Amino acid sequence: MEATKTLTRRQKRNIFFGLMISIPILMFILFYVCINANTILMAFKHYETIEGEYGYKVTFAGFKNFKTVLQMLFWGENWYMLKNSVVLWFFKLTIGLSVSIIFSYYVYKKMLGARFFRVILFLPNVISNLIMVYLFRYLVNTLIKAPNSNFGILEDANTAFAPILFFNLWLGFAGQTLLITSAMSSINESIEEAAQVDGVNSVSELFYITLPMIMPTLTTFIVLSIAELFVDQMSLLTFYDQFGVDGKLQTIGFYLYQEVYKSELVPTTQWSPSTPNGRLSYSELSAFGVMISAIVIPLSFGVRKLLNLLDPNEN
Image 1 (cartoon, rainbow, N blue to C red):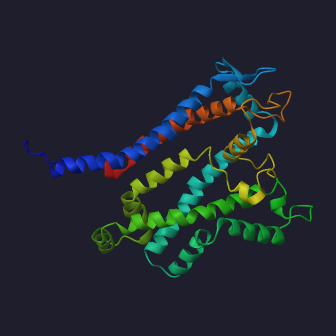
Image 2 (image 1 turned 45 degrees about the vertical axis):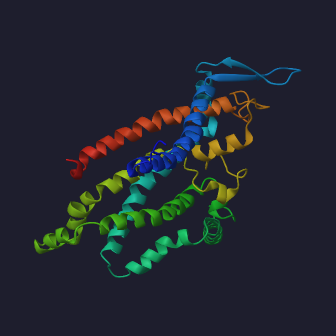
Image 3 (image 1 turned 60 degrees about the vertical axis):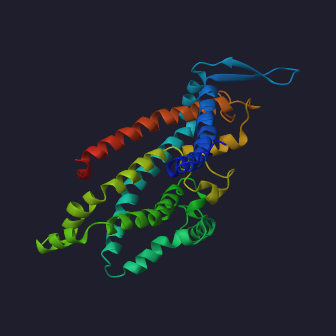
């Protein structure tokens, strides 16, 4: 009888690793590669219904879908979507991240009231987002009225953007503060002690020691913020429901959500300059997504490359 061959420990480990890694790879291929490949192809297609028959007539649309998206984006008040998305991103990146760094440093140094500020910052993440929105909306509408009106400022599209922006900044503090504080805690204490012996004050320590040491974490936040530039919905669904959002408050992310939810492969009333109340087709929405990716992907890699050059840990 031939001796049965047994697998070595290394071979068993490789088989186990291959089986475990095959699941996420399969998920990535199905739900990312296939879906996005279909989206790119659909962006260049045009669908028409065939009268009296089932199915659709598919033709090559070239860049017609992209042209329609650009027309829609800058038609009437639609440009508010682009403006709101950029303003939201800018304030999150500048004020939001800056305040998170300051509070993280304050908590990290265990200064007076650090525990109190930690509770206040984490409150939105402890309580349901829906409850926080309802409480915030009730308090703001009760305390602050819109100019020349008996309604609260959140009920007026001309005054609602600022308080909703403030709410989103507050909502983002908790996660950022947690991660930045954790990054600060990983700094070797001997470095800070040496700086303090040399007479470095807290402000100088923050800018010349702490921030350079946590630069990889800050780089991650900045790159991820660019990835969210055109998909952030600014909690509008929770504030107003999907059908009650004024055009002046919309972001591109919320607009895409609405259109995908309500549109069709061939909309009954398709958007055009003559029918501005119509819907974009799935092909045009695909073109919209491809345009966003064409902007965000190279921008993210470019910013990451630039920040890595500025990172003293990479040099």
